[in-house]
Amino acid sequence: MRRWVSRVVLGAITPVSLFLVGWWIPYLVGAVDLVAILAPTGLVVGLIADATLLRNRLDRLYSLSVPIQAAIAAFYAVMIYGFFMGLPIPVLLVSLGWGYVAVQTAAGGSAESGQARWSAIGSAALMLAACAATAWLAFREPWIADEVRGMLGLTVTPSLATLVLATAVAGLALVATAYAIPAILIARHRRRFTGSIAAS
Image (cartoon, rainbow, N blue to C red; front, side, top):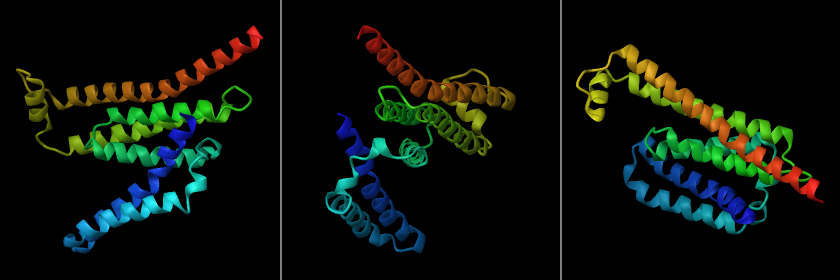
């Protein structure tokens, strides 16, 4: 399980990145017809790179430094955020994954303080960025109040102040949850480690 997670997390980065490069560059240069060629080519090249040049590096997730793990978490947060079209809730998957990595990176049986601290803080920061981006996109729409009324089946149109308050409360709840997930995983690991020492 531990090795499998490392290989999937690190192994997906190159193929996905090259696929997106092959997808977006033709759009940016106005050569849309090349997307069908360049995007799959990028994916295949990435998979080949994983199987050859990068093969020996795919098991190193748990030995990476905190900044590199943070960059990987940010990569997946952006991918998840984009895949779910600006919905921040699924970004909690990054919190779960980063918490798992922090536990697996444990040294001497207990999670390192740096890993423990930054997995929680970093997860909260990524969620804050996702919520801020969603709020910015939403409040740019002049008819956002009418859209909310229609989606929720409200009898009255909510005021802008109400929407701002609801957005802030929901965002803070998500940020707190993103922080709590790694913190809880690490705390459980520490309790188990302490219990195993006491039992021995």
